[in-house]
Image 1: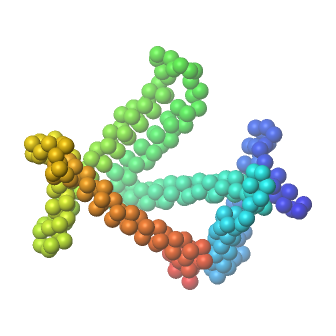
Image 2: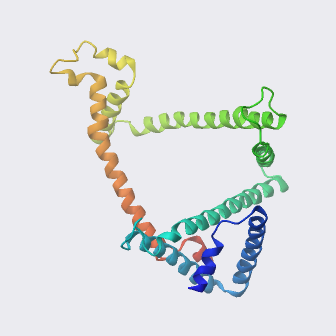
Image 3: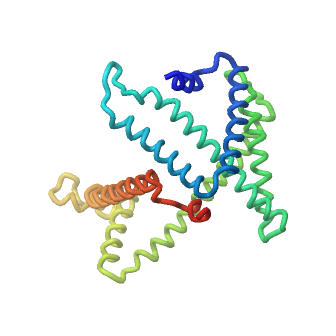
Length: 282
């Protein structure tokens, strides 16, 4: 119990900012030392077993906390109090993956620039954009501007607004808008009527698309809304296809995806899904 109390104290809020900063620095140094020691002392087989054990314990913790009976007020079990610190620890570990991602991108693009590979100027643009957004993003975040904002904002915030709202947001919108042309091209290839299934899909897509535009509603506007055959108005027919044909199919697909995700989660939890790391270390 003394060991548990000592571990629990590590997850409590720091009394002041200095203690928090010292704890962060000490934890970072200790983590690097432990990881380096494990990497140097454990062989490939030992590293595989370590990953498998840690993965199993983490999955077992959340499974037990969810299924173990609760009691008291508020209702909880012996693991409930650990949910918040463990979730925080997982978030911190996830933050390390951001650093690994940045390192991987810098490694790939840095090699492109150093070796002057075809398209190396795109890699150079990546570095310039990343450094500019990082510098002015952090600068803008720590400006501590008064509220309400002054009429003349500082130049650091102005540059950040140009980079984010003037460059990044329009480029992102343009990139996603290009997907419409790829979707149209894929739809053309998929809707070519060669089989009965393709013809049925083409008819359903035609009805739904007509039901979404004013021209489709105009085609059947002569059918009274309160008539017995009002079902054949294009907008109502398209809604019926989406609600009673498309929605059950989508739910079936999502149900199948959920079963597949559950199976994959069990394989990862039991270390049956080895992945690239285990293949390279074998």
